[in-house]
Image (cartoon, rainbow, N blue to C red; front, side):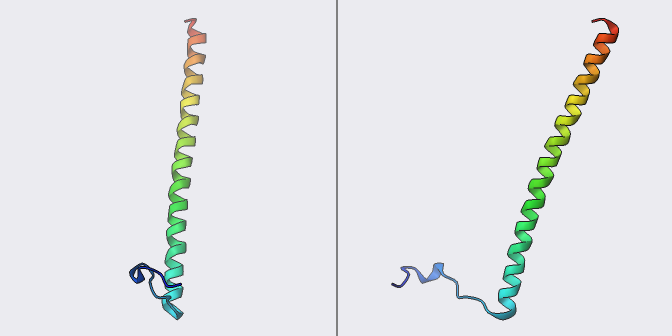
Length: 66
Protein backbone atom coordinates (compact mmCIF):
# COMPACT_ATOMS: atom_id res chain seq x y z
CA UNK A 1 0.00 0.00 0.00
CA UNK A 2 1.44 3.39 -1.00
CA UNK A 3 1.38 6.35 1.38
CA UNK A 4 -1.24 8.95 0.57
CA UNK A 5 1.14 11.87 0.84
CA UNK A 6 4.68 11.37 -0.47
CA UNK A 7 5.77 14.76 0.90
CA UNK A 8 5.53 13.49 4.47
CA UNK A 9 8.05 10.71 3.88
CA UNK A 10 11.58 11.94 3.37
CA UNK A 11 13.85 9.64 1.40
CA UNK A 12 16.09 7.49 3.58
CA UNK A 13 19.53 8.96 4.01
CA UNK A 14 22.59 6.83 3.50
CA UNK A 15 26.21 6.89 4.47
CA UNK A 16 27.58 10.02 6.11
CA UNK A 17 24.29 11.92 5.81
CA UNK A 18 22.54 9.20 7.83
CA UNK A 19 25.34 9.22 10.38
CA UNK A 20 25.15 13.00 10.76
CA UNK A 21 21.36 12.90 11.10
CA UNK A 22 21.59 10.24 13.83
CA UNK A 23 24.33 12.20 15.58
CA UNK A 24 22.14 15.33 15.56
CA UNK A 25 19.19 13.38 17.00
CA UNK A 26 21.35 12.04 19.81
CA UNK A 27 22.76 15.50 20.44
CA UNK A 28 19.24 16.97 20.65
CA UNK A 29 18.10 14.26 23.09
CA UNK A 30 21.18 14.89 25.23
CA UNK A 31 20.50 18.63 25.25
CA UNK A 32 16.91 18.02 26.34
CA UNK A 33 18.07 15.64 29.07
CA UNK A 34 20.61 18.20 30.32
CA UNK A 35 17.94 20.91 30.38
CA UNK A 36 15.49 18.69 32.28
CA UNK A 37 18.20 17.67 34.74
CA UNK A 38 19.18 21.28 35.33
CA UNK A 39 15.58 22.25 36.02
CA UNK A 40 15.14 19.33 38.43
CA UNK A 41 18.38 20.16 40.22
CA UNK A 42 17.46 23.86 40.54
CA UNK A 43 14.03 22.94 41.97
CA UNK A 44 15.66 20.55 44.45
CA UNK A 45 18.26 23.12 45.52
CA UNK A 46 15.56 25.77 45.92
CA UNK A 47 13.48 23.49 48.14
CA UNK A 48 16.56 22.70 50.24
CA UNK A 49 17.35 26.41 50.61
CA UNK A 50 13.73 27.10 51.62
CA UNK A 51 13.87 24.31 54.20
CA UNK A 52 17.14 25.68 55.62
CA UNK A 53 15.66 29.19 55.86
CA UNK A 54 12.53 27.89 57.58
CA UNK A 55 14.59 25.87 60.05
CA UNK A 56 16.74 28.91 60.82
CA UNK A 57 13.62 31.06 61.38
CA UNK A 58 12.20 28.44 63.76
CA UNK A 59 15.50 28.22 65.61
CA UNK A 60 15.72 32.00 66.01
CA UNK A 61 12.09 32.21 67.12
CA UNK A 62 12.77 29.58 69.76
CA UNK A 63 15.89 31.39 70.97
CA UNK A 64 14.09 34.72 71.13
CA UNK A 65 11.07 33.16 72.79
CA UNK A 66 8.54 34.29 70.21
